Image (cartoon, rainbow, N blue to C red; front, side, top):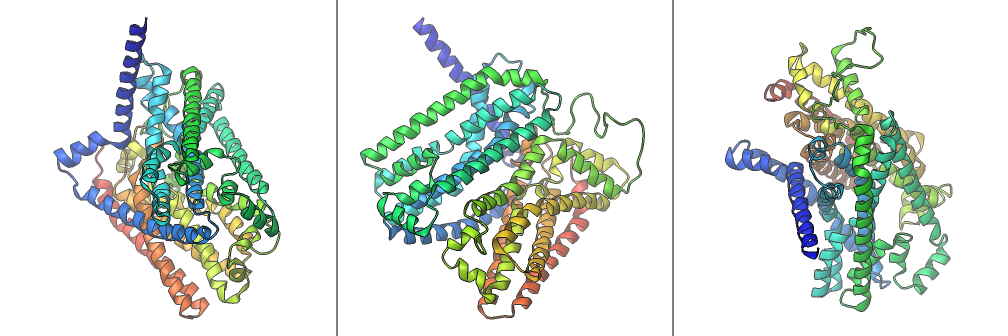
Length: 586
C-alpha cells in the first residue's frame, strides 16, 4: 500500500510539473520566441528595443524609488526603526498582489482557452488548480521584485546586515505573495462557482468584484482608525512600543510583520520564529485554497458551461456583432463611430478587459480617498496629508500654486500611463483583426475610431481621480482649470503614443483575454515611454520653478509640451497606419 501510495504521489508530481511547464511556456511564449528569434532569426531588433524600453523605464523608476527609500531610512533610523522600510515595501507588495491578483486569477483559472483542452484530460482538479496558481505566482514574482528587492538592498547595505540577512531574503521574497494570492484564489473559486450558476454571469462577477474591493477599502479605513489619531498619542506610541512604525503599518495584517521581522531580526530566535510562522501560515493558506479548488473548480466550469473566449473574441454559436435583441434593424453611422462603438462593446462584454481596465484607474484614487477620509479629510486643506513634513507650507504658500496644479496634472498623466486600455487597443481584437484589413474603409479612419473609444474611456475614467485630488489639494478655480487642462492634454498624449506602440506591434495571437492586456509587452513599453518623458518634463518644470520663472509661463509651457507631443503622436498614428495594417499576417 505504501509503495502504491508513493508511486501515486510521484505520478501526480510528474503530472503537475508537465502541466505547469506547459502553461508557463504558453504564458511567456518561450517556444515562440526561441523559434522566431533564435531559429528563424526574424525581427531581432524587437527584443533589443523591448529590453531597452523596459530597462530605461525600470531604471528611471528604480532611481527615484531607491532615493526615496534611502531618505526614509535616514529619517526612521534616528528613532531606531530602520526596519520600517522593509515593512512598507512588503505591505505595498502584498496589497498590490491582493488587488491585481484577483483579476489575474479569475482570468487564468476560468477565461483561458486551454480550459477546453485540459478539462477532458484525466487530471485531478487539484493538479490543474495548483499549476495555474503557479503560473500566476511566477508573474507576481516579476512585479514584486521591483517593489521588494530595492528595499531589501537599501536596508541590508545601510544597516550593515550580515550574511544571514541576505540568505533570509530568498525565502521571505518567495513567501511574500503566497498568502494574498491564496486569498485571491479562494475568492475567485467561490465567486465563479456562485455566478456561473446564473445566466447573468458577467453581472454577478462584477458585483462580486465590487463587493471584494468594497470590503478591502473598508478594511483599509478600519486599520487606519486603529492607529493613534493625534500627535501626542502618536509620539507616545512611537517612544514606548518597540518597532512601533512597523507594527502600525502592518496593523491587522500580521503576515507583513512576520516577513519584515524575519529579515530585520535575521540570525536570532525571533527572526527564525517569524519565518517559521510565515511559512506555516502560507502553506496552510495554499492548502486551503487548493482544497477549495479541488472541490469546486470543475464544478464552476461545468455549472456555467464555460467556454473561454478565444482570440477572435467570439463565443460559439454567435457571430461577432450579432445581438440577441436584434430583429433586423440597421443604424447608419460613420465608420469612425461604428469602430469606436464596436471597441466599446467588445470591451464591456469581455469581463477580463473591464476588470483590468477599471482596476488601474480605480485602485490609486480609491486608496487616496480611503487615506483622506480615514485621516479626517475635512480638517483643513490636505486633510491627513497635512501631517507630512512641509505639506502645510506647500498647500498654503502662493509660491507653490503652480506646483499644486502641476501635481494635480501629473497624477492624471500617471494613471493614464499605467492604464493598459490604450496600449492594447489593437491587440484586444485578436484574430478578428482581419476584419479591419477587409472592410472598405481607409486605415486612417479606422485608427480614428480606435482613438475615439480610447480617449472617451480615459476621460470618463479620470473623473474619480480628479475628484479625489481636488479634495486633497483644494485648488482654486483657476488652478483647477489649469491642472485639468494640462492633465487631460498629457493624458491624450499618453493614450495616443500607447495606441501607436500597440498599432506597430499588436499582440493578436493570445489564447486568453487576460493576456491581451496583462501579458502584453506593449503595455510595459508604453508605461516606460510615458514615465521617462513625464519624468523629464517634471524635472524641467521643477528647475524652471526653482529658477523663479513666472508660474503662469511654466504652466502654459507644460501644456504646450504635452500638446506638441500629442500632435506628434497623432501624426505618427496617421502616417504609420497603412504600413502597420498591411504588415499584419493572420
